[in-house]
Every structure is written in C-alpha cells, then in structure tokens.
Length: 306
Image (cartoon, rainbow, N blue to C red):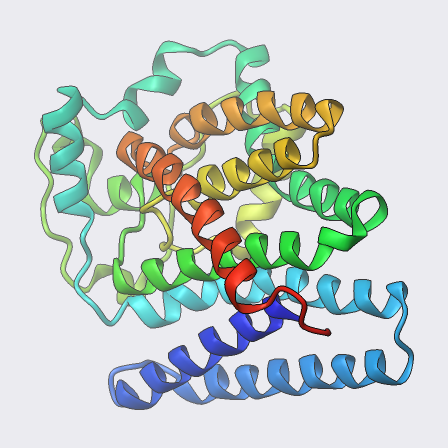
C-alpha cells in the first residue's frame, strides 16, 4: 500500500538518524530493534494479503499501521531530545503575538465542569475520528480507501519528521520545567538538557472528576512524552479528516467531524498541550498536507496494485 511505503520511508530515515547519532542517544539499540520488528510485521501482513487477497486482510494491514502510530509517537521524543529544546523561543513568540500565554490563562478563565468536560471530550475524540473516517472509506468508498489511508498516515509521518527536527514540548512540560513564576512574568528561560532526564508534566486543569478528564489522564500516562508540540498534529490531522469527510460527499460524516475539529482547536490550548501558535500552524499544515498528499498519490500511486 502507498501508506506502507510512507511508513518504510520514515523507518529508513529515522534509522539513519539513529546510526549517525548513536553515541548521543541514551539507548539506541531498542529503537533499531523496534524498527526491524515493524518492518518484518508489515511485510508479513503484506504476504498474507498476497496469499489471501480480500478486504479483511487489507483492513488488517491498515489496522496494523494505525496501531503502530502509538509506538511511533513517543519514539519522536527518543530522537529529538538530543537536540536543543526550542520551547523558550516559541513561548516568547506566543507572548509577543498575544501579549500573554493563552495556555496558562484559558483554563483559569473558564472553570465550569461542563466546559472542562467539553474540552476533554473534544481532545479525546481524536482517536475515534480517525477510526470513523477510515472505516467509512472502507465500507462506503472502498475504491478510494487506499488513498484515504495514505493521506491520513502520510500526514502523521510528515508531522513526526517535523517533531524530530523541532524539539518543542509544549506548555504542559515547559511551564513546569521553567517555573510558573517565570512564565506568569513573561520570562522564558532556557532549560538546557532538562528533558534528557525529565518527562514530568503539569497537572491538567479542569474538572478532575470528569469522565473525559480521567480518560485523558489514562491516555497521557500510557504514552505522553515531552515532544510533538509544534505544529499541533491533533489539529492538523483532524482537519485532514474533516477534508476527507467533505470529499466523501457525506454530509452526515462532515457535520459529525466539524464540531470536533472546532473543539480540538480550543481543547489543545485549554489542556495546555499546545501553544496557540501550534494550533494556527496545525491548521495551515493540515491544509497543505491534505492537498499535497492527495496530488502526490494521484501522480505516484494511482492505478498501482496493493
């Protein structure tokens, strides 16, 4: 599949990075071993599909790649923490653009339990939206399924390349490292190699007894790392999903995804996962990725067997 080629390309690129920075990485061997297992599993499922070519084995290939995203995401932290942290620069830009830190003030101004749960519901809808749009194309527009999956997974891997190259942890990690006193006074110190040995994050704001709040606590404990803040992949990928929904000509699907996209733009700042500029960059990046990957697929993969 086109999406599998994108994954393989990312695998090769990051493997080369690991080899060239071997002495700087805390534990490089598991990173390469994980890539080897990913490659073998992908090829094995492709082999199963060639022996039993049907929709079910095709879906298994896609489910594997989507599931592996939860492994690739924290992997960006293992790679980018060897580079200088850029949060002071982004926090300073945020201050100059808005005259404040929206991620610090947003949740302080909107404190109701209902609003808190709405924000956390919007943020946690990310995983559900990916599944719904993917399955819609699988069941309703199978002829475009390969392209839709390519656009979704291709977007993720482009974001991951950016996350490796731009080590930005976001407010929930940087504010704790820098100190809230400094942040509230508009002082954004360089934290040096702090994130080489620390991955603690601030307590999330909002209604702590809420169902969606507790879900996000669980999700963060399972896989959150000080990485992947700029641009917001949550916003960018959700916009890609919205555009795919619109392309499908299903107004029900489009109207279902749209409010979650709007909530996502607010929620990422509310829970302090991102700076406001990350959201703006996520929107721009999502638009570019959707149309660029759609065009690339048409030029490179259209008509190829999978």
